[in-house]
Length: 65
Image (cartoon, rainbow, N blue to C red):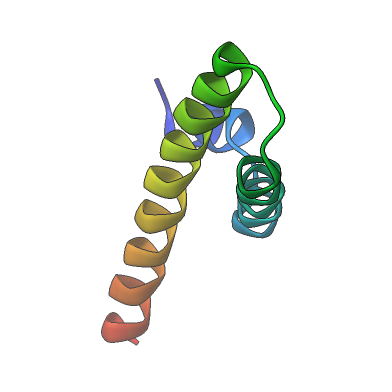
């Protein structure tokens, strides 16, 4: 899989962080079913990994500059 195709399949950092914030708010408010909360938690974990990876790449680029 090429980097270009992978980049098209994943949201930009800002959108990923926004979605993560929405999930955190939903989980903090409670009231969802266990299945919904587990799904949100799984998605949040994916988004955290994505954001961490993007920030690491940006840090490496900055260091090279």
